[in-house]
Image 1 (cartoon, helix red, strand yellow):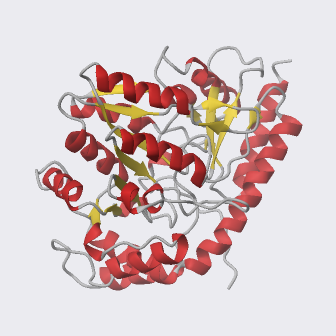
Image 2 (image 1 turned 45 degrees about the vertical axis):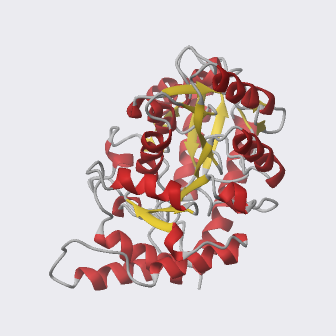
Length: 397
């Protein structure tokens, strides 16, 4: 059946973070939260559960782990055991707990900016060190700096401050890369050789476009799987982030036990009881909806790229291979000062400030000249926002 992704749903005055932060005349294309109605099977399942008058402590439905197991095997030929699967109230919780479990105290966490801001602060939250190895900006796409990656790991192993955890973001937020198996194999080989645990944030794994395939890094080999924590969720995919249900896959019993020690330390709550219900319905019944959504998002992505090239002089964007996010390079646009503030004040369009995706004045000095645009919205809203941005840039000349 066709789904109406062009439907505009007014989210103002609904406690939406995305649509409450700014004034009502601002178009919000910032936080990675889509503006599409949840799939009908998910809405139906939640309504059925809400009809029961008690919302006590919950546990995963018996079949949820089996549905996840089947999904991983079908999509990625990745076979995991039911006991390998655990549940968390968020992916951000997951990689923060991983820092506590595998890098604190005394270790260092390696991250590759520009990257999702909570990854930059996770090491500090756990009281451990942070090592930055920026992605390399190529002509067509960003890539790992494998030489600097290995140098960083090897150097700190020798000086008594070892890198003990690598936070990987794949598909990558904000640059939109879907890393290929060969790239992941090289990263994994370095981590295995230096005994670095990999924690892979794969929350955008469902948003991958034609010509690209998501490869969970843990699926590369049993050896890599034994040294990896994989985190993902139905939250962004199915517009259910507020229900707080995320998934971890940890195939090594020792690593899993260390993570479970952290989850049992009273630091995080359990998963929302409605989150379990929504996750099961989404993974079991909503694939046709997701298939159509991907087509819609891919046309939105192409529209953004074409519009930027044609109508936003000096703005550049490398083609996202995945996610619903565009990393806009404003270095040549002649914008006075901060482009985030410029588009907010002059266009009344809220984008993410690029400076949040890298260290201030550090290893990625140009991030302040970027903004992140969320194209996970109806085309009419996207068009209006881009036209406002065009007018704002025209008024500069």
